[in-house]
Image (cartoon, rainbow over all chains, first blue to last red; front, side, top):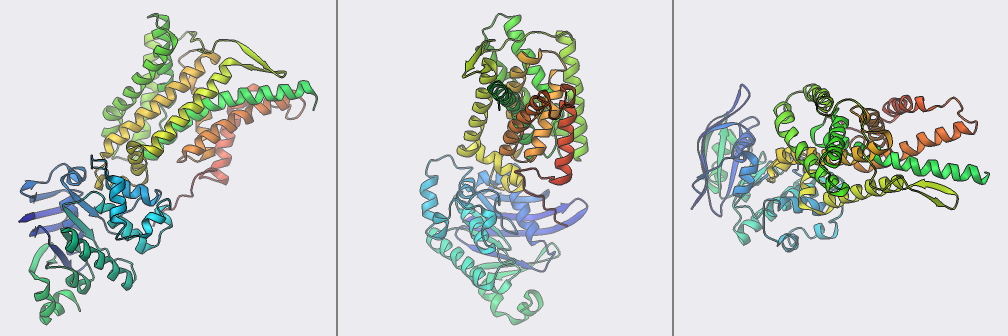
Length: 234
Length: 304
């Protein structure tokens, strides 16, 4: 079933057009990667979905148009981990996780913190530590943990590999895959590191100057040398 | 130290803590708004004056008992703060800081004008809920109002701490202060949180106003000096630090009283009551020059 649908979406920052014509779909239970060079519109695609940039075109989650800006998107079940560690640095690890559950009305938040700490055992022991004192990799994990706390229908990840050591990046994507396989988490991930993203996803889109240049299964893109050379640079 | 001098000293400390508690409340109001909106609310003092007048008119003109009038004033002030944010501040919030500052100065003038227009300029008497009694504790004479003011101020600080530290709304308020963009992404309605901050600030100011009126007399100008002390307290403690505002307020109150005390005993004999306000301004200046982030603040890191 189609969870997310973008149809001819355009977006701009003031006079600068960042997205021209992007159509893509994400089905429930999929991990979909968005690839492309710097300035191709990858981050803007995610920002258009979560409503942090003014956009036009159709954006629907499970058949319903997404409205009401980022607050509305969060309430509709979208968790957006922005570029550069989306954590509240002055707050503690536990407070960050509790904020992730902000839109939830149930009382199972504490139980959920224990549940997700299965993936990040250190978060329980270091719950009182300020996020600012964590390493870059830990902050990225905390941002992911915080996003999971909202029990999202769709997780948006923006350049999770940025500034992290390769080993940490691999660990991060391993956890994302595990979440996808064990909990059916649907993910739309934007990545500069095409090799890593293609290894972790089912399908991928390649953007070029604000348009979808090509799309296919991750395996197809990975195995086509000419595509790899001309679009993905490896 | 002779006994008389000691009890005099303690008396000055207690009354310093009482006025310091009031500075602390108003400083806390300034800090709450500065943390979320990034501006100094110059109308904070006048908002407090208006609140004190509301309490007074409920008692003097409508025959209410003190405490119901006190609580009603808090509620009205809270709602007033929210409304001011929604109607006056929100439209200019996205502009430059200067625009909001000018709007708060306009608000100062407007509220002051309203108070004079509605209740006249002559001073009124708002009585203290703690009476005019004094206690003699081992030779130290303390006013019931001072003790009550200290208790109410600390009580307010404690309630606020509970709110910020242990409730979901408090967590959201802190998240907005740390990173509003991020707060939006987790679903916090940032604009309402800012309004809530204005409501809380107005409530703190109301308490400060109602505690100030009994000692200095209720008049339209009564909070103007207190606002300067609150500025000094907030700058001293760190303009983004709630704990700093409280510590800054209490220390400023005690410090100014001790200067008066010492001047009676020969040291700093140049210090007279008229120098209290300039002294507060001097503290603002020195702190801004020597340690701009204040005692409890973190140095501001600007990314280029």
